[in-house]
Each structure stands twice: as structure tokens, then as C-alpha cells.
Length: 96
Image 1 (cartoon, rainbow, N blue to C red):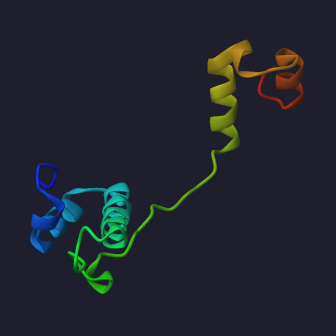
Image 2 (image 1 turned 45 degrees about the vertical axis):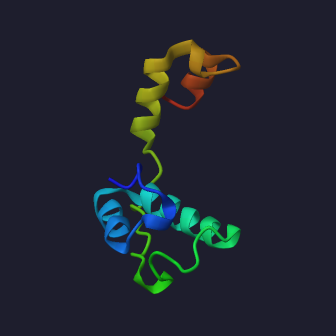
């Protein structure tokens, strides 16, 4: 676990273990933390050189389908829409 460690005493093995078990957010946060500590002079050298940091791999993003959209609107009901929900739902063919 990396959290209780003092920044100067953190090793590259600690960093890599946290990166392996973490998510994309962990990767981004640890990069930012290391860069901030270097900029502030709290670290004399990087814990992990930039080339050794794993690449950030985001999942493929997608939009919701029309069926998913209609199901959300049907589930949320009148609270999800700000103007004339029934008319709008009929125009978009989400309601009969």
C-alpha cells in the first residue's frame, strides 16, 4: 500500500504495485502527484521515469442507443424532462 508512505521514501516498486492494482484514474493521479512533487522540490529525482510509466489506456467510449434512451425516459417519467414530457415522448416515438 502506497498511502501511508512518505513521498521521499516511496520506491518504484511501490509505484508499480499501485499502478498494477489501480485503474486509469490511479495512473493519472500518480503521474500528477509525481510531477507536482518534482515541481515543488519535494523529490530530487522522479520515482519512475516518464518512459517507465505505463501508458494510459481508456476504454472505448460509446453513445447510448435509441432503445436505451427510450427506456431511461420511460423509467424516469415526468421528472426527467423539463418541458411537456408526454408530447415530447410521443414526438420522439418513445411512447405510443
